[in-house]
Image (tube, rainbow, N blue to C red; front, side, top):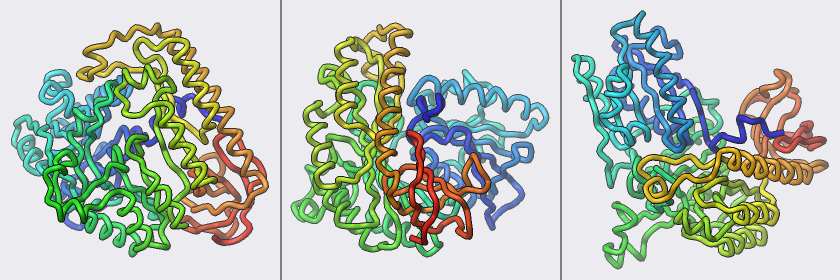
Length: 483
């Protein structure tokens, strides 16, 4: 069953995850990194570790031995920001016992608050936005010399494509590869365009090179990351919005996401490939046909919808209608019948009526998502919704509507997992099960967690597992052979 924590969790949250690696270049200084928020933040922390590793900092899991603490933050919801502030308060005690400890805040929250962070959180010495990480060695030098340091300038070009990420606390099996940064969609509830800037795509050559490097190191699965992966567009560099100024040759030879996906799957046929996140307005049937073409591209799409009501979608500035979203779902079901689909849903958006809420429930009933990530609306300062719309849905109504959405998703999740009972699925072993040291945990093609007895298998093995039982979120079975 879904836990309460899972209900309110972003699809890719890594709250409080501590990253650890040892660098060959080290003059005795150590940094301690915590990441909050989406997969992109986690990936960014790997970039930060690489950049500061070159500057002489090794990472440590022991906060007490750190010279530098970095907190990579999320601004997507008020609760995420409050979690970071609470964590910073806890660092006060550590700083009392280690007066030389320096504390830096990275990521979206740093970009949103900028130098104001130094005033609000006296413990903070350094503030760096998502596009300023290459400047971290200079910023760290500034704070080591006793000065506050801030760099939150958004870039139109930076993709960190030339940085070789350090795979932190990795299982050696799965990894993230960022392909785009930023977002142009301007959904009225979302702070991302203001904290991560405009969309720009990474050179496909550097993406494929990174994937090859991972394959050579024995990794078995990569997730291609972006705020909107389907809007990937490479025509030689520059923001997507400037594509109209490109030459005829650039336009003719441009690489879109379906072409990138095809290239990646073709070059690494033995590596599983996932991608996240897709935006309904940007996904094309070409992507679906590429997925069908390659067995190593997982049959799973995370397709946020946010609401089932056209009226609310328009107020959110979502660039798709309910009918267009359903049409895309129908294409997925036709081209990829076994595809797993998950959602993001917001309950209690300003002016949402009971009829709007029922439209959301009816959409869920139509799609029957495999799983979902559901939230109450949280007003974010600086967003169009915060400026123009009053947060006027009572808290108790928000909670009740959210619970109805969650209950519906629990039922649909069980409906989907029950369909696997009696089937044999291929599972990539990723880790030991949280509930039993005698069981492995991995995921199937549809991104559903599968647990089964360890036997003689090991992390990184592909195993065929016969499913015997399930919950609404987990498949339970026994291994029948290697994959």
